[in-house]
Length: 142
Image (tube, rainbow, N blue to C red; front, side, top):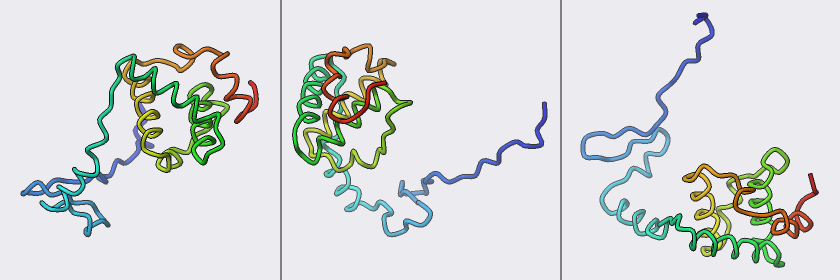
């Protein structure tokens, strides 16, 4: 075994010090103290994810509906669906998903969580006929 070119792993993850405060290099002003932690917890309370089939089905219906509208979220959602449908052809900038309105953000995360948790491909839960309008609107056929 040739160990000459072994990668060097450096510690870059946040570390916990005594008092359970997160120490992040370069982010000293965001160290979590009691009041700041409560504020962050309050902002993140809506992040509850659900992988029940009925919730994922509603999420898919919402995403297909949004993708076909003329809104700011339509292109982002269309690209999200296309990237799940054919990841080698359609690339997704995850930063774009941060701009989605709350209900659409929920739908995206429910679907993504379901796919990851169940180790599925979007093609296993969505038919081509369901994707065809999204492909026509936001992408080119394979």
